[in-house]
Image 1: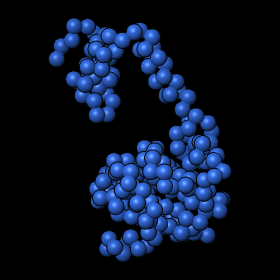
Image 2 (image 1 turned 30 degrees about the vertical axis):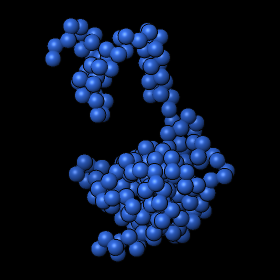
Image 3 (image 1 turned 60 degrees about the vertical axis):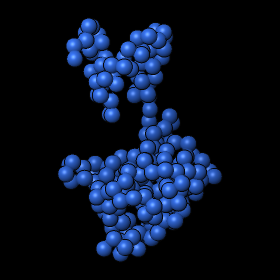
Image 4 (image 1 turned 180 degrees about the vertical axis):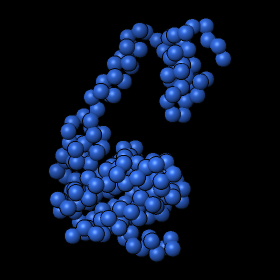
Length: 209
């Protein structure tokens, strides 16, 4: 499709680079912005730039934060001896929305995926292991998506954590989450039950073998 303005072409091309947005949706958003007051577009652009340049990752759990240490890690009412390991920040938000989990988190930043060239060194696994060595942690909950990459990462973490001098209990969320389902898309009730009814990881291996 040809556009009547190069400026329109440029903004459509940029918006269309966002995940899940095609050229038609990008065009609709661009024309919507054109109808709005100029200050609204300025506020949007400033918010994007500020977010991109000033957002931090928590020094403890690697969740997105405005401060060096996120609010969850700084909260004294959380169970700091209970760590839930997730793929990314969307999973933290999904679990928090259930209101059923009171521990803290560790965000891996992805999953081990040899096909995509993602190995353990590309994730925050080493930082997780150091955290478990240096802090008093009673239980680690592996809350990764029920996919091939999720199961691969789960098993790798299980072996590494089990090798620690003092290994915490290792559990995984119950399979209320369907096989092949991304954690972030699970409904809140199912996710809450999966967290509450977590099982020892060793038991999950036997069930899947």
